[in-house]
Length: 126
Image (tube, rainbow, N blue to C red; front, side, top):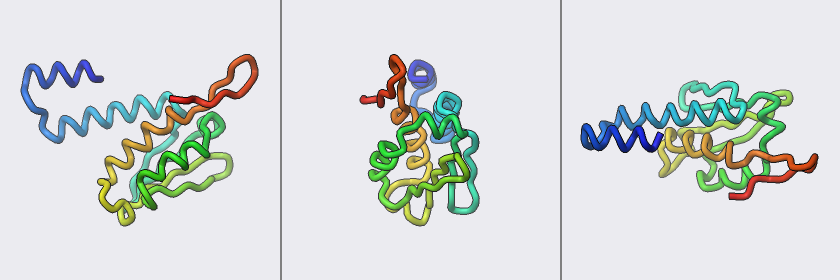
């Protein structure tokens, strides 16, 4: 993705905001596939990210909640059965643009995955 972005800038100069957003969405789709994100939906001023049951089991929820504190009260967490649901509330995003919060949370999910080594659960540390 970074190489593609650099190539576009090299050939065409500064990217329009629409192109930048398109690349950011593509990057989020990659993260979603890697981490078991089942759906991302917007309903009015709320954006919800729902992980599959396997994705929920693979993520370190504590680390995810801790890291999301950077966005204040904009991010909420709940469970739908065995699935983790994160909700981004535009009304509570303050100085953060909701799209930036969404991208930040999508980046945090793979950074919060658990790892198994020799049958033991090891948490990612980056």
